[in-house]
Image 1 (cartoon, rainbow, N blue to C red):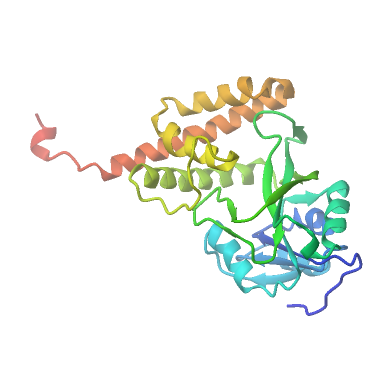
Image 2: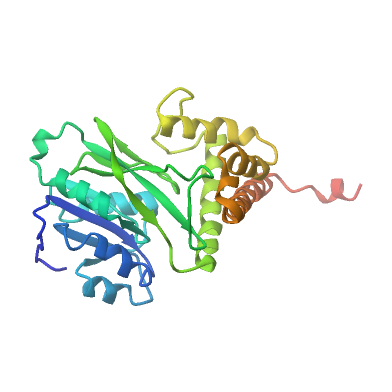
Length: 298
C-alpha cells in the first residue's frame, strides 16, 4: 500500500471505496476524488479483472480484503485502514462526485473540524438507468449519509441495504453524486438476484424475531426509521408485493414522468420485488415439515 499522501487541495479527507471487478467503473469514479482527497482507499474482495491495475494507475491505494458481507466489509475498512484525516467519505465504485459536490466538500474539509457543528452529512444521489437519469420513481431524491467525522459512524449489521448509524448532528449537502454502473444490465441483474436472496433472508429473520439490524423501526421516526418500519411491519403483510411496488413507483412517486425509461425501470424494480417474495416463500416452504408418505398417499 502506497505511503504517499497526495493532497493538492489541502483537504482533510480520506475516501473509502469497496470494489470487486470494477475495472470499467473505476476510471470514472476515481478521477472524481483522487485529485483532491488526501488518500483514496479501494478495498478489493478478489477481483479477476484489471481492478488492481486501474486503481494504481488512477492514484488510488489498493487493499485486498476477502469478502465479509456488505456491512462487515465497510466496518472492517473503517476499523483497519490507516484513516488519519478528520473526515471520511464512503463512495461506491460505480458512483462519481459531481463538480458542484466536489467544491462543497473541499470547502467543508478545509475548515477546522472543531468549527463544524455537524458530525455527518447526507449527500443526494441520482441514478442512471439505460443511459438516462431517473428523476422520479422514488429514486430521487436519494439521500445517503456518506461524509462524516472520522470514527463517528458505523454501518448496522445487516446483510443488504445496510444504513450508516451516526449518533450526532447531521445536515444535507447541496451537490450530487451520480450512480452509473457501466458494466451493463447483465451484471445489474445478477446483483439484484443476489440482493433479493439476502433481502428475503433478512425479512424472514425479521418475521421470526431474529433480525440483527440495529436501526430502530418507528412509524414516526426519521426517514430511515420510517422506511425500516414499513419494511419490517407493513411489507410482510402485503399481498402481491411486486404490484404494490410498481404502483408506488410508477404512480405515487410519479415514475410516469420519466417516460418510457421510467416505465422500464419501475417494471425492473417490481420484478426484483417479485424475486424477494418468491425467495421468502421458498424459505418458509423449506422450514415446513414434509408430508409423511401415509398422508401424501391419501
